[in-house]
Length: 152
Image 1 (tube, helix red, strand yellow):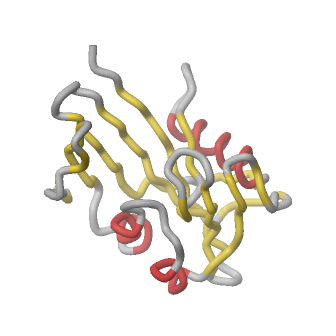
Image 2 (cartoon, rainbow, N blue to C red):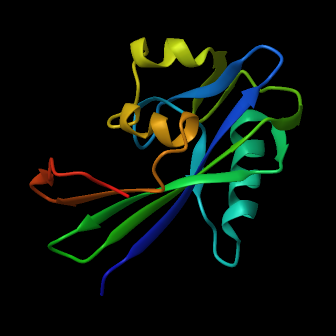
């Protein structure tokens, strides 16, 4: 039976400094991306994003705005992995310098392309900053990722 995996990612933006919060991930997909984590049983997507931001950054977020879905489909097993992307500039609390997932720190959007980003994360940045696509779809299997990426 095919499996479905749900993850939420959130870009937290400080409008006073024009910086966004990133995480240098050491587990799962390594490298710099926005904080993210899995949706737990019985949890809504927004609740999962709020919980994950608190766990991974120490910050409490609110007023999350959806900005797209990343959808990977395994054409051999039928498995799907969906990442629901959000953004917010409404947050409070004390930033944790590091968790088991990795260090968290603020950067300007212009700095992002030159950082050691997680694999394929740079492709998602227009979803967060330009709001021009709502879905990124890509096929993968044990042989790797199909280079044909569809944007909707």
